Structures are given as structure tokens and as C-alpha cells.
Image (cartoon, rainbow, N blue to C red; front, side):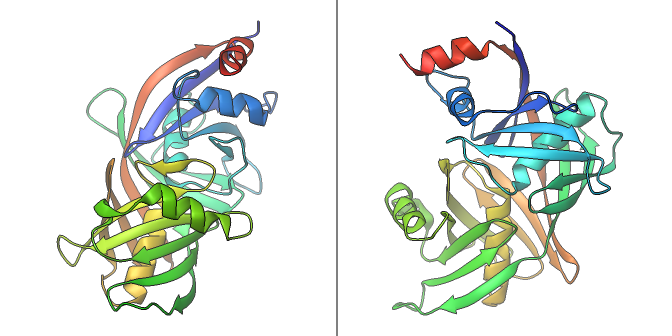
Length: 273
């Protein structure tokens, strides 16, 4: 009946359960991740993050699993949630520290907010690797793959509010080996804004995606639709993306939701009922 201590955080509604495991003693089995992330029989989240000791010169390391239990390379909102948990646990001292991820070492700038549990965090997301501009039948629809350390397919079109994200996103994910994150975007309400909905591999439609917001901004700039500063309006909130020659920076709010004590056997038992 060993308990598991977690905290829950979200960045623009993209929520994560965070486990502090500096000594690397608490490996997260896929079935436990799925049970914890279940929004009816578990706690509910888009993914689970373990915060571990740093490697390759970084202050900390991130072990990230999607809600379906699969391992993920990188999450822009996830790493910002990790930052809040690590600062609260006294593992690092803000404002700046580095985190090793499967997508590379990332630098975080963290600022505590005025209210309890609120903060602002930005993260160096590295450079976007743009795939070829894919030909489309209609002038107002374009598509491009973008690698942000994890794979994305950005689809430009009319207002994504009318898109069947679940149907199209799951279908497109299925034809890409290893899966892919799919962003549905439109420009507006100003030339400095994008509106986005996203289908995340291993999760489904989420309220926000940090790497997806960066991929969308990079693709839109490559099409000449936006400049270097972009506000990306996700369903759960707005994220700010800065694109320059050194790479991309993602910024936005992060919120702590709860401290949680769970009994893994109970969570797994509930999931199997």
C-alpha cells in the first residue's frame, strides 16, 4: 500500500501529474500512467512527468509519458509544469535553470506570480525543422510537417472551431509511423494571432499544446502569415511564441492545481472495474 506523492499543474489547460523522483526509484509503468490519467476512474491528466536528477550538464531531467502510457520526447507546457513543481520542491532556484529531455536540453525562465500557485514560465524550445510545403487543392488550406523534437503536422484552414478534430486527427495520426501531433490553425483575429486546436498523439484533443503552438507559429511564418512574435490562442488559453535566429521561445502561465496522495494499487483496481 505504498503511496505515491504527486502534484497536478496545468499550462493553458494542458494538465500534468508530476512526481518528484530525484533518486530514480519510481519508474512509471504504462498501465499505472493510464490509470492515473483516466479522467473518470483515476485522477485525470494529459500526461505524467517524473522530475529526476540532471544529466548532460542540466539541472534536472524530465521523464514524460502521455496519457496512454507511451513515452514522449518533449512537451512545452509539460516542462513549464515541471518547473513549477521543481521550484516548489526546492530542487532549483529561479529564475533560470535547465532541464534534460529526450528532445534536448531546454532552458527555463520561471517567475512566481502574485497569487498562490500562479507563475509565468518560458522555455527555450530549440529550432523548428520545417518539412516541405505540401500541395493542397484549395488556396486557403496548406499543410507542413514541423519537427520540434517531436513530430507535428500543421494544417492551415478556416476557423478550426468547425473541424472534427477527433476524426481527422486520429486518421492522420494513424498514417504517420510512430504517430504525429496534428494542429488545425487559422490566422486571426489580428496578423499577430493564430487560433489553434490540436490532436496530440497518445492523448487525443487537448486544451493546449506548447510544442504544437511553436510548430504552428513556425509554419505560419514560413508561409508569410505572421511575424516573429505570435500569440497562439489555444482552447485553454493563450501562449506566446517568439521566433528568432537562435530558436523558438514559448511563454505563458502555469498553475498548480493540487497536492495528491495516491495508492497505486487502488488506482489500478479502479481502472479495471
